[in-house]
Image (tube, rainbow, N blue to C red; front, side):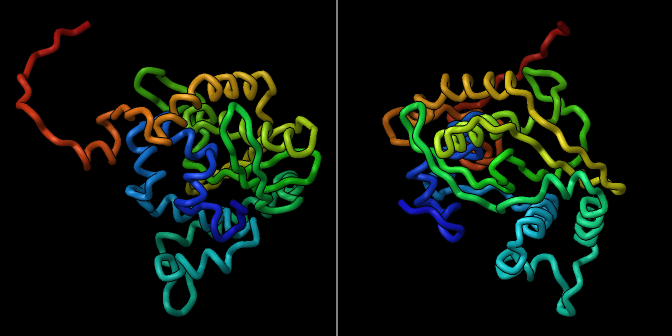
Amino acid sequence: MDLNNTNYHSTEANRAFWSSSLFKAFDKCEASGLAQVRGEYQREETDALLIGSYVDAYFSNELDDFMKINGDKMFKKNGELLAKFAHANEIIDRVEADPLMMEFLKGDKQTIMTAEFFDVAWKVKLDVFDGKRIVDLKCVKDFEEVFEKGFGYRSWIEAWGYDIQGAIYQKVVELNTGEKLPFYLAAVTKEKVPDIKVIQIPQHILDAALNMVEAKIERFDLIKSGDVEPRRCEKCDYCKRTKILTAPEVYEIKEAE
């Protein structure tokens, strides 16, 4: 399958290739991930996600295409952003005001590459690629640690799987160019006063993330192909939506640990 900007996010492409976002979806909930591959479920499109997508589209020179799909959700008839989305332009202005942020956003935009490793095919779409480094633009809530049950407080980079994304991007680029290039996040927050950072994810963290991908991808691919039944997390929106009760629960009082 030849990938392009039109079909990159299609159900057909997700069936033919693995991506960092698809891997992370399976890692959070196998049942939800499989439903996404089959086109049976999509993440809810929140206002926060739309703001992030708008900022991404602006800096990737894809704003016209974004407007064709989402313009009626974000803009008034006179062309102004709706009040709840007006902050997106302030985020853009903050990024453009910083020389280092703009330096790291120079290069080819939305470069598509594919490669095969760990016995599966992968696809990536690089926000910024200049042949010397890989840069991904992130528009995030804030830079605070994120609490996750079973992990405690974690860096927002790990909590959102950006280390996994960087590891996969780096590997695909290496297999296409023969060079292992550094991976950076150019990040801006959605806070009232946007904060900014340029962060390099160290190689040992990328290596650890890639090892984790290798350990899990065989099972995930068997689920994707229909050879193994997916586990349900029973916590995500997909599992809540598709839950079927089989018996009443017996209420128990849990003693303090």
